[in-house]
Length: 483
Image (tube, rainbow, N blue to C red; front, side):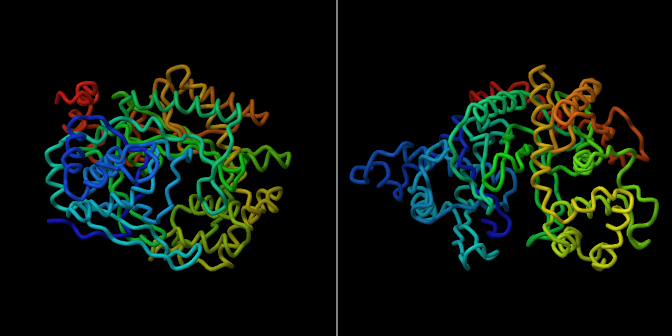
């Protein structure tokens, strides 16, 4: 039975999805012989020869439907169905998908292999706008059931553009390469190749996925499944507002979305890890720019910043300060702060006066930062921390050390802790003139129940984990279709 399609539970079509695995190719070959695809088997009269064969473009669709089905059977895929919506020569379309994609989607629907939910358009920048959604129907699911290839061991997305420039609306835009961009892309390609050749997983997970609560946005109050491990990811550097000096952070690693309690479980090549973060990095950068070096915890203001019913006051104050640094005005800051908390959370009910009081305590301790609040500084500071992260990642990967960045924190195997700490000091000193303070977020190597909030079975390797590790060690056989 085909599950109902929920348009809100979706992700975009991965236009870089590719695999030559024979079992997956067999599904595409079977579909290609169906009647609805006959016009595409003999494309005479359809205009210039496409850069990518029509059958290969169908394979991208089928493969991504397979990945979505294996990851979460209820997950739908967003597809642009507007004629002219596909730019074959775009640097963000390395597989050269074309305007035939909407036609292939309709052919899949005609054969009863997918369910299609048409998109909607309510006006420019409207929250009601969405692309069409597709999900595999039961006949296609039956074909997938015969494949049994682990998603995490399909080929890595090596052709994806790794340096992304977006405009103010968050849309990818074209640009001309420079020597610096080429060097950045080459570093990212080598770094991703190291990640893809490394076993990164959580030994406490029987299944390679984690259920995450969504606390804000239109899906607040629901959950989503986050795939864990494997090679179905690609770390890219993303710049914003059409500027190479704004944002620039590293995005794409599944570990970046993983809740902290699970991040502490991450193993790299079956070895435990440790996470280290910069303490108050954005605040430290701003303060140094003002000529003041921070000492101690910047969010310890010596008094209750919020009413007593608000627990973990430091975390709330940190969130409020960082939100204010990102916002362009006070009202936007306070509204954004409240929106990040679920219904029923005490912070959701805090008034503007209460939030203004909390910020006042922070400013009283750090008067040099008063004019940095509500001044849209965040996107610039993200570039500053991205330079630190990128330089650190480049130094470590060239020494064969796998580091997993989470913007201003970093995960490495525990035996590389001292190397990581040294590079963090060296990198900030080189880029800013002074080392910034760091905090060690303990992993399994430093068991401390009061600090670590140890999960049940956290230090046990499940059978599922053992199986995934064994599959990884035999990944060449998987790729060749022997298993």
